[in-house]
Each structure stands twice: as C-alpha cells, then as structure tokens.
Image 1 (cartoon, rainbow, N blue to C red):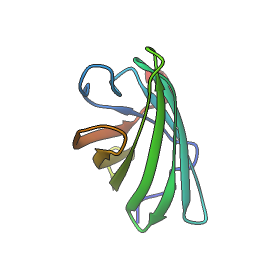
Image 2 (image 1 turned 60 degrees about the vertical axis):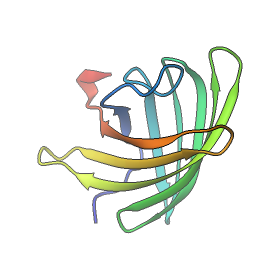
Image 3 (image 1 turned 90 degrees about the horizontal axis):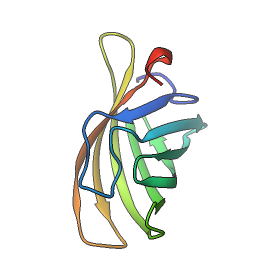
Length: 116
C-alpha cells in the first residue's frame, strides 16, 4: 500500500473544464485510521472540502466547493493511490457531479516544497 496521505499537498496535472478545479488548485490531504479529508483552494475554487474513506490504495469520498462566482457544487469521487518512481504520490480519480451534470477522470500529483 502507498504511504499515508496525511499532510500531503497535491495539485491537478491538467486543467478541467472552465470554472472547475485546475492546475492552480491545491489540495491539502489528511488521513487517520482509514478516514481521509482535505481542503482545497485556488483558481476558480474559493474553498473546497472533501471527506471519505481509504481502504488499501482506494479512496472513496464526496466533495463540496464554493466557486469565485458564488455558486456551490458537490459530487462523488473514487481514486486510486499510486506511488511514483520519484517517491511522490499520484491520485488517479474518477468523479461525478451530484449537484449538476457531468463526470470524468483526473489526475492529481504531490507537489514538492519548491513547487508551491
């Protein structure tokens, strides 16, 4: 199993659709006893939160976010935790909005200290 996500900072490797999470968004993950949660902000997202569970290298969580235009949205995501050759962590995500139409896949990777 890949290492703990506690305290890990992650960022998307590519921009999603306009008005969604993008390369300027930063996720700060926390993990304890099979629970995961994170805060995220940046780009079009003023404030976002996710909460869920980890079983092995599988994450299952729901997310809610507030965007710059004052709208909110929520959805569900399942992710696989992958350890990269350089020791960083990648999450390969499959997500679906629940508050609006849309679904897709995305990848977030650990940001090292000099990339903040």
